[in-house]
Image 1 (cartoon, rainbow, N blue to C red):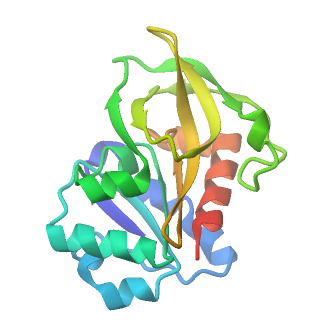
Image 2: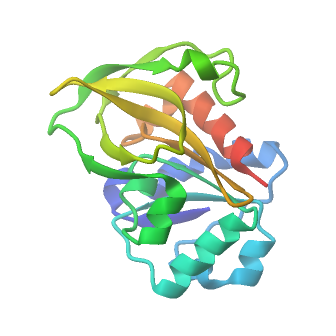
Image 3: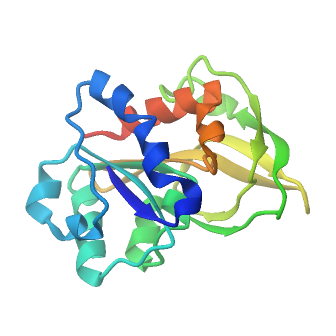
Length: 204
C-alpha cells in the first residue's frame, strides 16, 4: 500500500478503510509513504498487489520503470480518484493506468453512476445496482483499451464519462474507480463494496 502526496485526499485515512478487508482476504499488508519502493524491483516481484493513494507526486525514471515493469510481470495495481489519475505524469505510468484527470466543477455534484449492462456480471460489480453520489465529478481522458464497468454523464456539456474501469497491462491487472475524494465517498455502501472487490480482483 503506497500512500502520500496531497493531504486533501486523506491518503492515510482512506487506505486504512481497506486494510481490514485485505487482511481478511489473506493479504499481508505492508504500508509505505516512500515512492522509492517502486525502484525496489525484487520487492515488487514478490508483491501480489499495489494499492496506491498518492496525489500530485513525481516519480523518478527509475521509480516509474520499476512500477510499470512490476505490473507488466503480474503485480496487480489498484486505486481510486486522484490517487491514481492525478498522481504522476509519466508517459509509461499513464499508459499503464489508462487515464488522466483533467477537470471537475468547483462544487460537489449529485450525480448517477450506471453499471454497464454489458459487464454487469463482472465480479467487481456483479449484483450491484446503479447508484447516486454527491462528490466531485471527474472529467478524464481515458484509454480505449479500458474495460469500463460503470459510467456517468458529465453535466456540462453532457458527456458520457467512465467512472470504474479495469484493464490488463502485460500480465498485470489494473483497477480504478473515480469516486473517492472524501472518506464519506468511500464509505458509500456501493462504492465501498465495488472498491473492495476491485482491490482483490486486481491482485496477482
